[in-house]
Image (cartoon, rainbow, N blue to C red; front, side, top):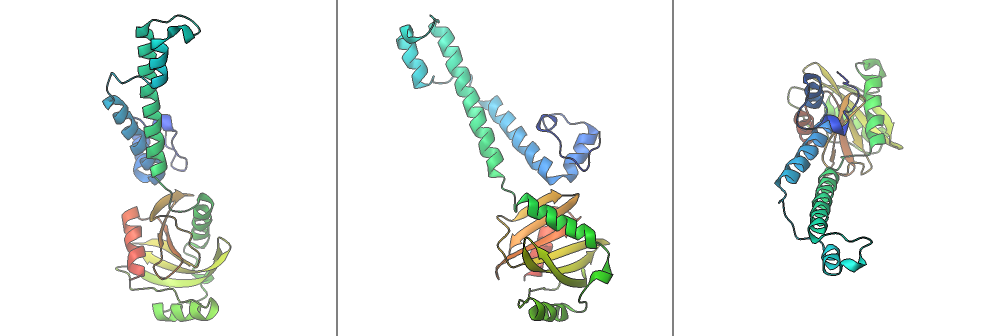
Length: 237
């Protein structure tokens, strides 16, 4: 199985992976995060003690079995209580781990950015401006009344830029090339990035950070997450 464009199901992300599944997880940030959470829950459940203090409600029934609908032995109630406590602990831990992984931006915004990147990829004719970072900055200062900071980027070439409407707001879009890869850098006026990080959308890595000068900065392309985030940080230095 090789579903590079689809996420794996939770039941496929446990202890043992096929070669195809492992290859997918190696290139899919979302599935990798989900697998880490699932493995952590499995390990936590294995580490749970085999005995536990029964819940107060179960203890009350043990002391007064007449309240039960049918007469159960104390031992049977204790087994049920321990099993319930273990199940509740596992569910709580799983929800905590899953909710602890916050997506850096909304799914629909990540998809919009990824599709925009794919639409213009290697299409230099779509550029409204080209030249040095200062010249590109001047253009956006005149047309968008904002000048996105664009510091020199190591081993990356500035191809050009254009205005682009993303998330209902006009943003500055600057194209870069690094190691033969086309990258789309969006300088957005709105606070659209909830947390620093990357997601996978339409086969594209979409990484975002909050811009210390206001708004958000998002980079779309196909480089490793760490490299994408490094380039984002460098662009704002």
